Image 1: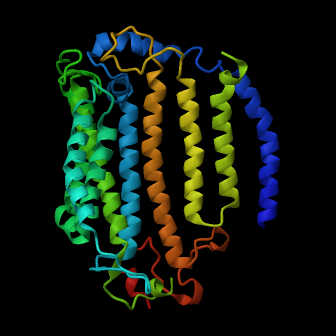
Image 2: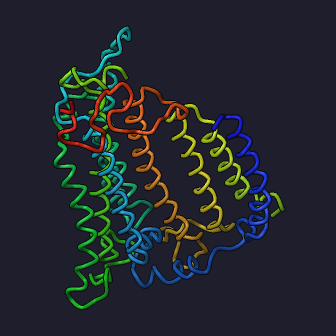
Length: 258
Length: 139
C-alpha cells in the first residue's frame, strides 16, 4: 500500500469516526460533575471495611485482586517474551566488550557522574522501598515502588559502568524475583482457600487504619507485586544492555551486514 | 463550569489518539512508530482520569483527610495504573521486535518489512529468532 493511499484511508476513517466520537463525548457526563457509583461506594465503605487509607491499593490488591493477578501474569508473559526473543537470537556467547561505532569518540565517565550516581542510587532504592511498604497508607504501592527500585539498579550502570553493573546484577536472581513475586501473589489467592475462605479473601488481621500494618493480606500481595516488578524491569534493562555487547563469534552472518 | 471545560478532557483524549494514529499510519521508522503508539496510549490515560474526576474532590487517599471527604473515582486511577504497566512492558516487547526486524532486514522502515521465511534474502542466517537452540548451525 502506497503512503498516499494509506493517508487517504486514514482521512476517510477519520471522517467516519469523528462524528461518532463527537456524539459519544456529547453523551458523556460533563467533566468533573459526577463520578461512577462504584467508585463512590468504594470510597465510602473501604476505609471501614479494610482499614486502609489508599483506595487505589485497596482496589488493586483486594476488591479487584483477581484482575491484578491477571495483570501480574501479563507482565510476566511480556517480559518472558522479551527475554526469549533477545536471548534466543543472541545466544549465550557474548563478550564483555561494548560494540563500537567506528569514528565515534569514547568519552570516559566523569567523576561527577560517578559521585551523583553513588549518592542518588541508595537514596532511590530507599525511596522505592518506602513507596512499596506504605502501599496501604500513602500514594504508592508495589507497581510504583518496584519501578523506582528497578531504576535504582540502572543508576549502578550509569555510575559504575557495565562491569560494575554485571557484578551487582545476576540474571538468575532476577528470574527468581520475578517468578517468586508472581508465585507469592498466586499463593496469596490460594492460601485462604486452605482455611475454607474464598479465593483471595482477606483473612489476615486487618491492622490499624493509617498504620503501616494495615490491610492484612494486601501487604503480602503488595510485596509480591513489588518483587515481580523489580525483577521484571531489571531483567528488561539487563537484556537490552546485553544487546550492546559484541558477539563472541564474528562469523555470524546476520549481525555484520545489519 | 462552561461548556468548553465540560468536554475539554475528552476532546484532548480524542485529539491525542488521532495524532498518535496519524503518526502510526505515516511512520517511516519503527522506533517512531512505538513512540506514536505511546501517544495513543496517553489518550487512554487522559480519558480514564477525566472520567473519574470530580470538581472539589481530593485524591482517593484518606490519610490527611478523614474518610467521607468527597474523593475522585479510585477505580479509574487503578485502571490507569494497570494501563501504564501494560504500556511499559508492551513498549519493551515492541522495541525488541524492532531490534529483531533491524537485524534481519537491515532497515527500520516499516515499508521495507518483508515476511520472514527460513533462508530468506541471500540465504543468510537460516535460524529464525524463534529457534533458540541449534539454529545457529544451519547449513
